[in-house]
Length: 143
Image 1 (tube, rainbow, N blue to C red):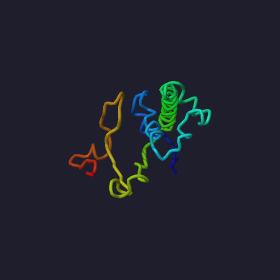
Image 2 (cartoon, rainbow, N blue to C red):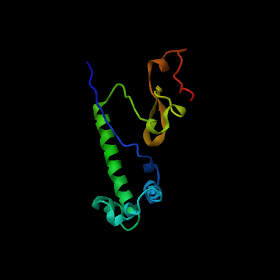
Image 3 (cartoon, rainbow, N blue to C red):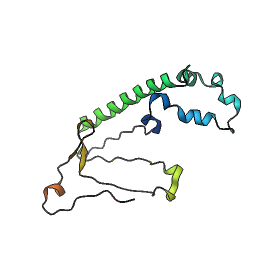
Image 4 (cartoon, rainbow, N blue to C red):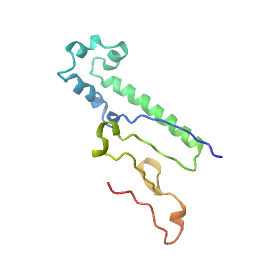
């Protein structure tokens, strides 16, 4: 029998932007003419949302949010490292709810013999296929 560790992390797309731009999605939404004007006024928002928006349109709140996310990512990574798995399955929803079959297939799998090493470099993992002369290596499927 084996043990299973389940971890979940955010895939919030704005995290890839700078703190100055992290609230752009909200700014875009606030420009929507279908949103009632009263809902666009920060004074009408919940207290926590007003605090995150602050006086700088969310820049300071974005920095706090990024710090919290990074802390959570590090905790998840530490839990994974402590678990020392023989196998890792990474699962993502790939925004299927937005794009459907015309852009993203319902399911997809990808196996690789590569693993991430320090600071973004890539190194080759030692797998049976990489040690067997003449064995084929897994390749990323074409889209």
